[in-house]
Amino acid sequence: MSLTPEQIMAANKSNLETLVGLTTKAFAGVEQLIELNMAAAKSALSDTHESTTSALSAKDAQDLLALQAQLFQPLAEKAVTYNRHLYDIATGSSHEIGSVFEAQMAKGQKMYQEFFDNMAKNAPAGSEGAVAAFKTAVSAGTSALESVQKAVKQAADLADQNVKTMASSALNTAKTTAKKR
Image (cartoon, rainbow, N blue to C red; front, side, top):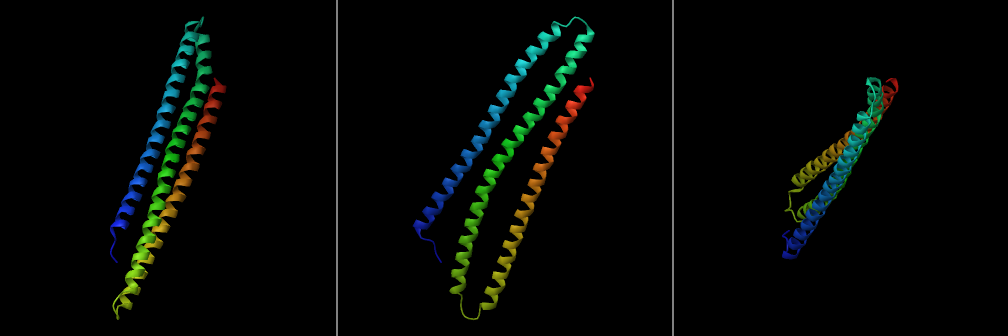
């Protein structure tokens, strides 16, 4: 089976569109990250101004200690929220790019399978054993790849759940610590 110039051009066009789509998704993730960091910087500046003003208006060490206790919980909550948003941006971008790669891989596997089926139909007489062995090897490789993809998805889901659990735990610890002060 030989490729026609139209097929080559179509494949190149498809690959270019995929590359542009991936680049657009990557830039969207970077934009979200910049927006998150700008919001965090603005919030930190405002919080620093407020806490400095409060510290300067404290009358004694007891007031400063009370102020410190009041500042700890909101700071911890903001850190957890920032990290949660950062994680959401990263996983969202990763899922989008991963889905594009999965689609491209499925498309490639389909094209490869069609090519192989066509080649098997046109194989010389007596090569049935070799064709069957090759089909078995391709099938085993495809199954192994699918197993790896499934394992990676399960690991990513487990990591996602662990991050959410740790964030919740950190926030609860911060609240408990702030109440004790």
